[in-house]
Image 1 (cartoon, rainbow, N blue to C red):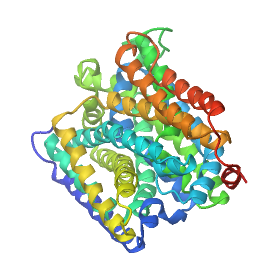
Image 2: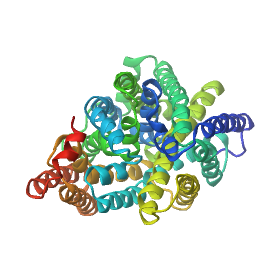
Image 3: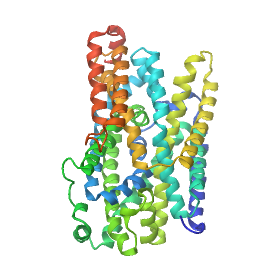
Image 4: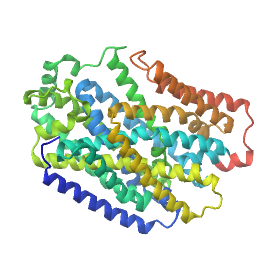
Length: 488
């Protein structure tokens, strides 16, 4: 943190808050019902949703946290980023057509409601919403920590003030406009944050004399910075595990599913696919590259990244190595990246708590009452996550990976069953969800690296899919007429 507040950068934050306030006001005028707030009434176009997808996918968690760890890991971290584009392609080309059709057919507004309606099981909907509501918190907290770390290092704000400012920014527009505000904001945020990481990426290579010279400099510091880690080593396990978790784990994250399941038609789906895949390739490649490059640039300036807190390496790097205009651009990018993810998490959490946990027990709740309650819960979720970020800050990568492993392990089986197995039923889906959740939790507690080189994601997802399919074979299938409506 700086000794004093940088008024220029503070002004940038204020301007950003004003812009998002305007977006919230625009979104508020479009929100007339729960369908508008939850899913944008299924009317959001492909270009906006494509950008919103990778803006939600990548955040300050990647720009600050993962890039900071990459500075310690070396260029092998870029392998993690390569799989993001593959995951984006699978999301829009394989999963989105079926999910978008089923969401509309079932008139589902949340992921948990989709599961409840698809498998005709309120118990499944309630259980999945509980898992989502509880275990999305670590990832939301990680995003708040990343944003606060940037505000602390670049603007000079105390860390806790950075967290509070982050929460205020989110509340400005998520509360008012729901998915309309969120996706409009994410469209603009996605553009700014992508420009920011590309400029830092190019500038980093330029400072080190080009690609070849930069890699030679890294190699002179340590050969491990430019080579892939030895099979079975802790770093090897980390790279392989995070490649799966942060790549294919995205396919089963409720906040991501809402991005590629609420697309309005097939033409827009193709547009979204192209933009999402392109953004999911460029953005992580840049972030995972400038992370290791920062090690070579910071060393002559008196900083040893191997002894630093990974959460603060990249803010320190940007502040120490680049001119004011680039620091300003990066700060804007971090603000956009952090809020583009936090808003989706808060939006999804508020909707899940209201519609899937409270509404089933209040049968007479009107649409207007539900909308008002959802907005209030979005504020509560924001405050709770801010409190955790202030008083229980942790390593960004650890918090993020934990959330993604739990949610992917719990939901992969039910998603696969819902989309591709007509015979899949509620007993199979519930069993798969429970099996995936328990296996991932037990593995994470007792067998995760460094005990074994295998991340909990792998056994958790395998258990979820296998149990869902096997139990569905022996349980009573859903009625044929209902299934026919879902698989035209």
